[in-house]
Image (cartoon, rainbow, N blue to C red):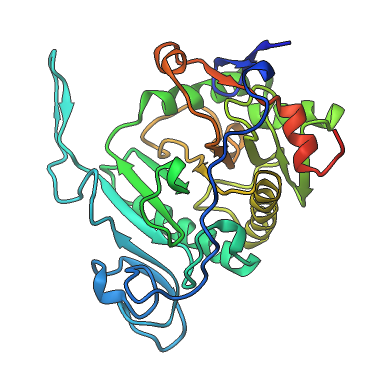
Length: 338
């Protein structure tokens, strides 16, 4: 039987409808390729094929825009917004911003990995530490109000470059969906004195049926009102800061869970096609929610597999149909017999 579930985190509803699909419609995965490709602009030795780097985790003694890096950050060649544009807002019936912002590409690993599932824990830690540095740096630009961190893994998820990479888009305004998400978290904190994410994880721990794994203070779980089949969230009941203030211990725990999550997804579905989003609150000082930032808002990573095609109902209503219940997804990801 189907259920219409309320997603308290995003203040929306999701239709869980197992009758809609008997098995995931997952495309054939790309062959794992960890070799250095002569023409891949993201591979070591091909630094001249990209714009000059903004930042890199490097071996001691190596030089910018040369070999010897572990992660590398460059401007996006096909940028959606650009730092050179005017920081200007135009009011009126046809309101608009000039295309100001930052659009960066983080080359996740020096190896030509096509999926997170091929990373080792050191590479995952380096990736998170690189994101930590970039967000901390961009916070100093007073024109920026929101920073989006996301990954598109696989063709179905919108990736156009096989070498594992992440994107960062910094904007002079806060998108409505993001603002609503953090207002929802703030209202819960104001009413209960607890973080909304922490309360949800508390609830999940009562039954453990949707919890996939735990590491240190962090929990990997399939949310009760999952909008996507096999959707997972990594977060914590404890305040560990945001992406730019996570300490190394937290990064190690998150890295272990992330690798576990994607490998379980690969084992179950045989493919890596997902979007990944890292929660980043509107920049402190720009939007005052009248609450301690780290107490009200928890760091989280949301993994959204793209194994099901969406149509007119989802686009028109804004309500997602998920044909795989999160309870079933969690059981399968844990390797349980169903």
